[in-house]
Length: 585
Image 1 (cartoon, rainbow, N blue to C red):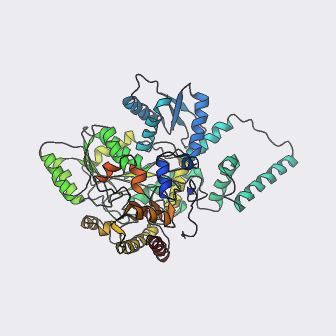
Image 2 (cartoon, rainbow, N blue to C red):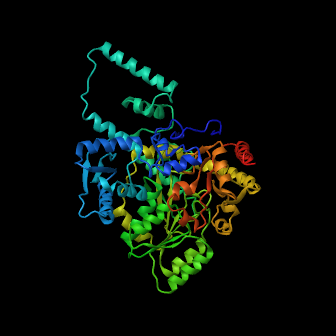
Image 3 (cartoon, one colour):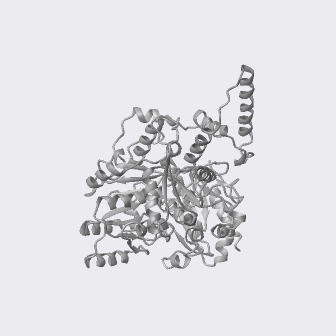
């Protein structure tokens, strides 16, 4: 069970510690977060990982360096993507937004031997002028379509191996010596897993970690990836019992979905490499299937959703406050003749935890003929059922569905009840591309087996923390669905045994108290949410550092502290927060 005993405290340490593909990184103080945003060396130089859409993992950086040296030209940089289609999207995006005149932006495909039959391991590289690095990284960030660190690690090994002559042992004695030395290296890693630095890691370290996962952990061999993805889709569709392993999945017929729309099956679920890529793909799907019109972004979303709607297609109408009055204004806009393609919203929103009125949104969608896309990441489908009101539901599987903070993933679910179902399903049958790396799918399946059983504990813990914080005189606001003016809209979609989720945000009366509390609280501190352990971040600093004034116009305080609540015992959690609050007096 996770605890507060030893949260990582060293700047740049992965969260969780000793996790090669962690999706969070330790930024243990307010000043460290600011320094990261400002690119200060004392923070950035210590980071070998970060949140993957914003920071290129060291394995990705190494692979980029390798392909640049082999295939790049003078003054060219590279971005590596998991398919030719994605690379072409990147090239088109860069041509459209670059300020250069006739830049040379080219795509190179590389064949990489697959780890198993049926696994796609080829990569596509976009080479571009060195001056356009920020533009290339913005494509990576907004679309969530970059290769994962596990895929980069695999491709790096295979491409290096192609250049390394293999030496076979010349005798039985040589073979025994090689085996003995290898065992010693493995034994050292088991006894002291945190001793070796990434620079000291050899090719066999990855082989050994894979062996441990498959032999003593719960991971499956990569050859099972097809079955693994079926299990994931069934789990998301609500047609798979909890805690089943793959052998049971293959032997068991899926039951009727426990979600809120009749007829939902795994065939209505589509898997993506990140949550943001599922949002990007939903928007691309609508642009391909329907008449291109502006969309609506309702409520203050995670920033890249808004970027997607504005940078691809005709743009969007932004109702950033997400209040009931905004729906009145939207109806006036529509009644005046404005036509929209879709409305995107979060249920509830991150970080203000406001809940949109989905019943009213559905009424408007039916009357004015637009698609409703709901991001259920923060609420999650064990707490809330939103398919009744949505045409498309997207989610980041990186978060509580996984919980272990060591793999990325996303999903898109089509509602069989939607009047757009047939056209969207037909379009997906032609446009959908499965670009989730096989190893990532295997880790995600393993992590999510106990997804449902974790939700209840996290709900209880979050409510206990809210109870403490609401009584604290230094606290100005606690944002949480249960204590929001929009609670009624959440309750209309809450499941019979559902709670209010594991995300809350705190605003203190005085900025100095926000900084002091953040520095004092003894939890993990870094980007991301939905982890099995409690994780804090100064949200506005890491998400809106260069646009704080704009964010504050929509109620996002510059000193907001976001709390993602984990599985610790309620007593320990409350005690830890109590101690941090005491430091303010």
